[in-house]
Length: 161
Image 1 (cartoon, rainbow, N blue to C red):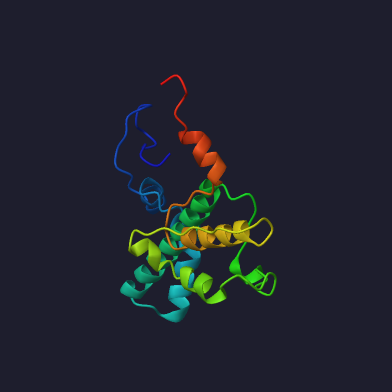
Image 2: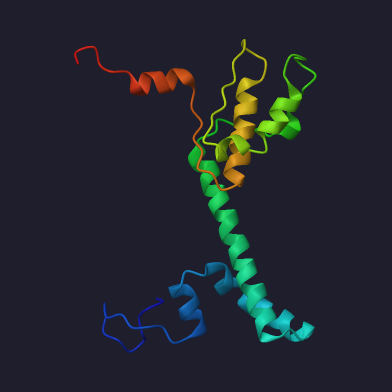
């Protein structure tokens, strides 16, 4: 266990004094799993201490960002994974492609704005909403997929009130 010393009574915590113990205690799990390989690569490449430390923390940061992105995608509750790459703008032709592509830069979020997709059944509103949500989740935005009817039902005031 990270903070417990081998000779400490059960339940008594102390500061870890091994590299592995410190990495675990600090919850640097990617570094804990990979630091030996990074050390070996640093030795082969004759990296400075600073460059080694930068590489170790860069890898840790990338792994953490990927985990957080994956968690945001799971928490968004998308019914399926849809991206803009697999959206067919040729059917229907009435979808304003440039407006959708502009929305994908997510600038409306910086302006505390919203985006509403309105149209008949079967034109790709759900696909586009999921693609936008997926892009937002990848950009660090907490996202939740829901349908308008579900929001209305969730916030409907009971008739007895």
